[in-house]
Image 1 (tube, one colour):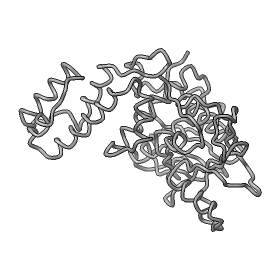
Image 2 (cartoon, rainbow, N blue to C red):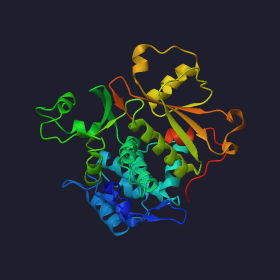
Image 3 (cartoon, rainbow, N blue to C red):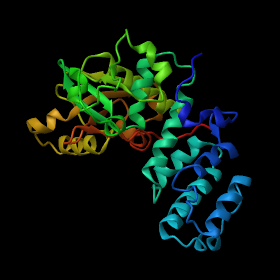
Length: 335
């Protein structure tokens, strides 16, 4: 089996009896290496002592007094966020349970970056053993922002952070369109290039075709189904739709903020203008294999999922919406 996404830290975690990821000291210490928490040369003795003590015992209790002793206000806030997040992880049996608790009960001050990191490593667990590079590239949408552009009549998604971190003189048509440097190696995932994904999976540098009716949107639908099953133990089928006629939007889930806004408009019977329709990336129909898990009001009906980009052509998917927005009677997490 080929490994992938080493950067998420999955190799530092244990697995519980139910298959969920169990926090280890090694995993917690990775956060201590982040630049926001590594004490700079001018850091106070209190901050250095706290950092040193947590490297020795990643689970040690940190008191309000320990945090108040940090003189720099920004550093103190970073530590408060980190300790609150660490304590949340330690209160739950698995990372999956931690993620569910966050998205169900409110994120509070949890940084979006931390939520993305959890989605990254949990999705790595859900896709363990996967040998389909298209599914893995589709799954990147769960934790990485994408920039959308049209090239050769294809709607392509490229990692936003990868683009932002690059600049220079473009040469090829795709690189030129995305304002990437000549040295950047951006390939569109097709059958001839898919095999290279395994050695570059942590570089997030492959463009992905999300054109309606093609393999990309279908792969994303399959990944979403695996996410729902892994997190909620509910089996679903998710079909990417090419044409939609007389759809009953009794229940819909926006897969991002823009998708939710568009769904609200459709539910209220509003007509979408051309620009808004152009922002819709994908529309999916979700059905439950076991109708008994669905609330009585929606039993026998499909749920529609809406994926859309914003006005800047950026797509930021919210996979938590799939866990909190479905009409399910009993929600179960991996233990």
